[in-house]
Length: 428
Image 1: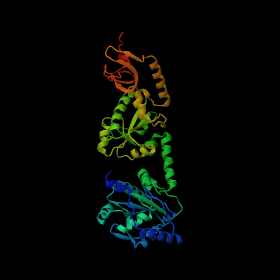
Image 2: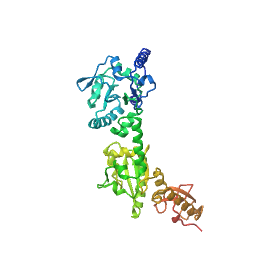
Image 3: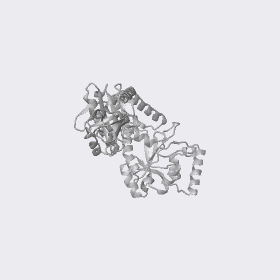
Image 4: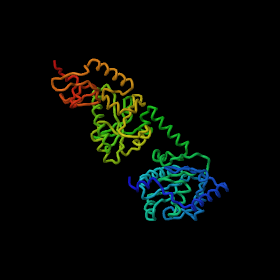
């Protein structure tokens, strides 16, 4: 990790003792006159003291000699915060995480401005100089605090900002606000408004309902039918998947383990699809970094994928709480989750594991034990000089017929020679 990356996560805390006393005196003064604003930190900010939670933004600005904000080239009065939810955005042009977050916030902001007037975002710069500040605000449609290096240090201390981006909702009422507004916006966009804990709980409940409800149209398209695309052209709809066992495959071209597992999954998929009575489909949910990588991912896949530009990709990852790739989650014909351990099932059992339920896996394990009872523990084959021992292998290539094998094999401890049980020719 480069130093610049570390600074994206941490804001220096080298303020002087005099500045600390100044903040403390200001906070006490505001509390004495009963000025209340509840601030809860997003994306790394933390309200550690009740004193700091009660700071009025307008009063803080006036105490620092700031009597206006900027809207483009125009000066505008400081907002009172009576009719709107005020949110403070702490960000910097030099920070890659900030640059990645700003477009997401702009999209959410524009959506909210089209539907309601209760939100006002105010940008507080953590840029190193005014040139960086001017460059950063070019993409911002909201209000901006005039650039001041001393002010940014003061504001960072007042609102306990320890990483950027931070998005801090302020509220004049008694509502409890969400602690991680940056995360909420990344996950839910404009739907996260008004950034309260109640709204956060509502959104999580909706995710759970989609995950457990079994309604594929709701899961894949937020209540509206959406299409899936194939690498070689064509498309299907969510309604075409109803009644099938579905594998939700999360992966990316840049991930070597994903490329390896994709080959295994393709083999199992093709073997399952040979039997037309087995209603089965895989849907690819890409975590690729760009469209070019996405195209590379789906170019060899025989199953459909959620389009790269669809927000549903991110929604599905969040709903199923996917933390790593490759990951494979199976939904049953009812649309409800059968297992989140699909990757291991396919790696261990291949097409034989279909429909990948616990009952099916138990059936396979019982059958394998019966097969073992009918095979010798070791033997000597005329094609090989060493003793071969019975072994369980997830996958192997038979050194005689050159075909892929799974489960039982006769293997050589000396040189790694493997034979299918059906390829054995014992010596007399």
